[in-house]
Length: 75
Image (cartoon, rainbow, N blue to C red; front, side, top):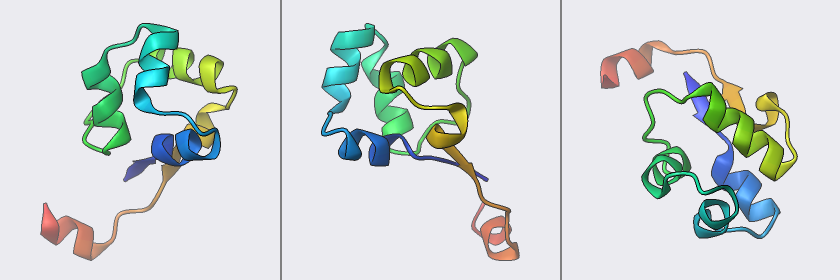
């Protein structure tokens, strides 16, 4: 499973989703889905813009957590 660290990065940088929306002109709904870990996919351009604005690498923005049997049963 891929976990977004977007809310953690925003907290570390003392930013809100609204700040990212204003600065990047990205869709508020896209960023809120990413913030709330509700995204099922994300566009490379979105990742690129976030990495540039937040001054992070892709690996800082997302973490891979291997699926467990319990994760499969919840789906």
